Length: 164
Image 1 (cartoon, rainbow, N blue to C red):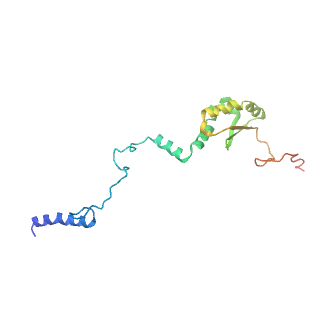
Image 2: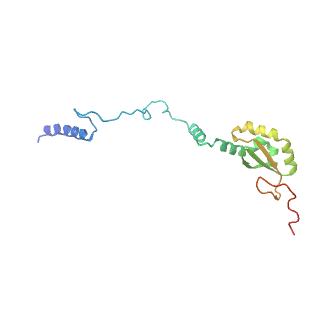
Image 3: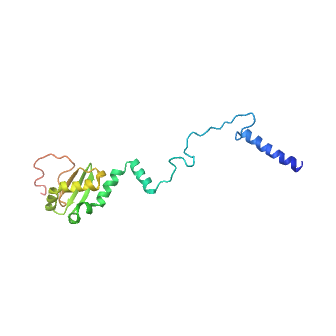
C-alpha cells in the first residue's frame, strides 16, 4: 500500500468511525444531537458576570435565613456603642431569645435605672439593629439564688425554713 492510498483511507476510516459512534452525521443519517435550550453555558449571556465576595455572602445569608441571627450577634458585639460606655460597664446582655434581650446589671439600682431608660435603649437597638427582632428588654440584678424554675411559676408563699 502506498502513502497516497494510506492517507486516503484514514479520513474515510475516521469518518466511518465517527458516523458509527453517532458523533458525526453521515450522508444519509440525520443528526441525533439535541440542541441545548438553556443558555447557562453560553458566553456573554445575562447573569454570567462575576459577583463580588460581599454580594455572594449577602445572598447566601439571606437565602439561608441567617440575617436575623447575624443581626442578633452584631447587637451583642456592638453593645458598648448601643448602650453607651458608662452603661456598658455596669450592664451586659446575657440572653437573647423570642425577641427578649435579657441584661444583667451590677446592682439592683442599675437594673431599676435601666428599666426607667428602657424606651430609649430599645429605640437605639431598633435604630442600629432592626433585623435583630428585639421587642422587649428585661433587666435583672446581680446573681442571687432564685426559687423559680422555668417561665411559669405559681404565686404563693414560696420556700420558708429550708435550711434546717
